[in-house]
Amino acid sequence: MTDNVNEIILETRDLTKHYGGVHALTGADFKLSKGEHVAIMGDNGAGKSTFVRQITGVEQRTSGTIIFDGKEVRFSGPIQAREAGIETVFQTLALADDLDVPDNLFLGREITKLDWLGPFRLLNYKAMRQATIEGLERTAVKIPNIRNTIQNMSGGQRQCVAIARTATFSSKLTIMDEPTAALGVQETEQVENIIRTLKEAGEPLILISHNMRQVMDLVDRIVVFRRGRIVANLNKEDTDGQDIVAYITGAKTGAEYEGAA
Amino acid sequence: MAQSELGTGGLEFDKKRRNWPNELNIFIALILIIAIFEALGQILPYMNDQSFLFDSRDRFDSIFNEARLRIIILQVSIIGIIALGVTQVIISGGIDLSSGPLVGATAMIVMSFAQTELVNGNVNPKAVFGEWAFDLPLLIPIIVGLAFGALIGCINGCFIAYTRIPPFIATLGMFLICRGIAQAWTRGKPVSFPTESYAGLGSGMMPVYWFIGLAIVFHFVLKYTVYGKHTYAIGSNEDAARMSGINVQKHKVLVYMIASMLAAFAAIILSSKNLTAQSGMGIFYELYAIAMAVIGGVSLTGGRGSIIGTVLGAMVFGVIQSGFTYVKLDAYFQLMAMGAIIIGAVVLDKVRQERAAKRT
Image 1 (spheres, rainbow over the protein chains, first blue to last red):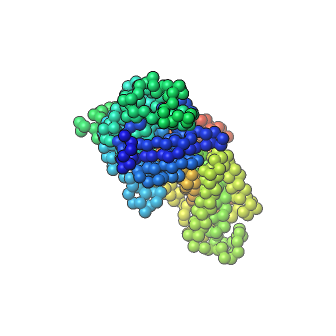
Image 2: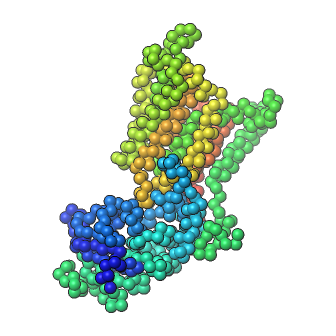
Image 3: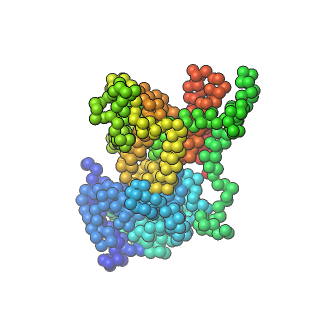
């Protein structure tokens, strides 16, 4: 199902990352189609976050190729990745507590007037507020007052704001690193609803999660990492929780990855 | 307005829960402090029914004691200019201890480019340089002063941003360096007799106009420009700012440069007002400026505060100082009381933060 070349938004070939002598990621081949939602699972230290950090340019890979949207890319930092259209929701929320919702959504890419003023160019608050409302409505995020500072919001609302960046900037790929790890039941549901909205809108997503129910509920395909290698690539219909756990723990290894781990 | 234009998902925002602006608290505190001094004037037996705020002797055609008001605002305006810069530094999550000595150093340097040739028909007895440096156009000392401020701020900022040493240490070092420059410049001798145009910069109520003008400019800059927004963002969550694509290091250098240029400008106004520059100028100014910002609600943890708050903080500062003199509190105790008030302001800020955290 991932063989149609035109439909592939992200592909990695033989992606490898070594931290000194530690092989955090070895030979990861990965493909993601447009509109597809893929979960990445694996134990702590299996290489999930390392994999994501190479794609988003937070770290520089040791070797391998990343092809995004038909072009080979080498992002020097997360900013460049973002400009290319990869939006990442980090494990630690990258939000400024003392600023309100539009400020956070547009942080680092404000809508401005009088650009010749350089760092003193003026902020276009009105346009940013409008775009924020539109973006939030599109993702069905519920915020009572967008001019409230992030500090005064619940954990779920904060996470929603972080995710809503994606919708506001119509990115080409969203990556979420354990978006519901610290949330309560209701808040988790709210975030999951947003993910469903993204699916309906046809926006591709890579979701890192430990939550089996969530994964089985939300995504099309599950990729399992173990000890820095991809050990399984499973369609949701062909697998179940038990099966995935077997791959995560190493009791089982996918046929195509035999000898890998 | 049934459908709120600020909420999404059909949620209504309860206007009653809107945050009470912090500046209003400070304004109320200012009124309260004035009322307390007014009351003390009536109560204390040795005060002879003097009024703190109101005119009690019909000296002027005004209900207020204009002389006192003038002094209050005049004495805070020069340190207030420094506080405008310090506010930005603290909002960005830093601190600047070097502003006081920078005032001394800048005053010395600037004054030596602003000297007039003839004093009472004789050659300027305090001349630092030769003939070429006499009666230069007004613009030259101003440019020299601001450039020196920018240089010091740039050094501060570069060390803090690129070597990641704590701002406290970097600016403490600069504190000593600047005081050293001030003393070395003329080996401790004062520099005096500026040109007429230079003396005009800080004469009369000019410092107040500069303070208010700059406050308006920087209120606007902090609130409505990208520079301001990024300053708040960096102080609020530096990692988030970095991940959002803000060049945090470059921005910090800019913040410290602006702060030091404001301190240098304060030095120009101060030396112009006093018609002389001495290496000991600006002692405690850095602490007073920080105090004004903190009293004005600028959070020492960064991310919160405003220019309006700092201006009000400066007024509180001035009223308290003037009030202490008014109730004839011994000058020796004034410093102690000032210190206690600063600690009190920080404690209040802490309490406010914890209350805000509990509310959610």
